[in-house]
Image (tube, rainbow, N blue to C red):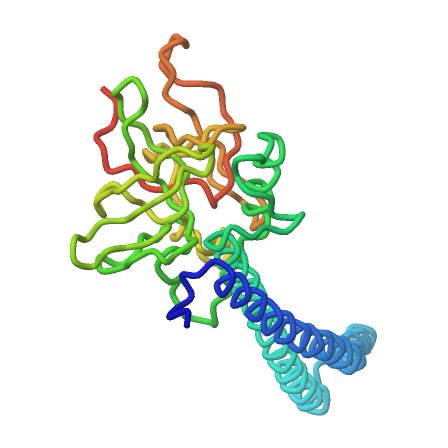
Length: 309
């Protein structure tokens, strides 16, 4: 009798069962998401009629050049309805975003399970066969699909939203991407983009894989050598305080590489879809900094080291 799932055949069968269960759940969530999108459109269509009435009422007031008690009462009622319509649509959209987050979480769990079992799909090949161009594309997609934090009125951005640091007791989960400080081949230390494999609560150490290594050994690192990456983009229009400010020292992923280097914020994002513009430290330039380069919010983290003298 085989005692546990360490047997390769049983473990593979377990992964297949998990995939089937995940596929069923994802299909259900997609159906629910489709219904929520239809509800959003229906709600918007209803609210458009009321918004049109508001516009026409204002036009009549301008034509008559007066604001009578009748118009004030009418507008008060129309705006109350418009506010309720907007809140209803917002509630549906938040519910839809929750469904999307659930789907992404299930897909990530399935990817991690497949990686641990050595089972890969065509869309997620093993790292040792992944071409560098494919890896760079995946990193760009990860940055583009990072969810935007949309809080309720008066709600502060959570930890790991933009520049907001993780709480002191935070432990990154398996599969999370982090900036990890490791020793390079030449003995120097560098910050690399890595994926969390596990965390040992007894030793307070992580095991991480270099996202760009091909079959090399795993890194065992203390918590102080790990910086979790943002899990949400901060919205510059509503939460500018959750972004790094101009001239702030950061660690940023150098374009087309998987290494983080010290940089100064040149320009923070102005719109939700914008990247940071940063100046990397570079002694080959007269002023010690590179020309401005764009780096996504996903790959910019705080640098606790002292600013370059």
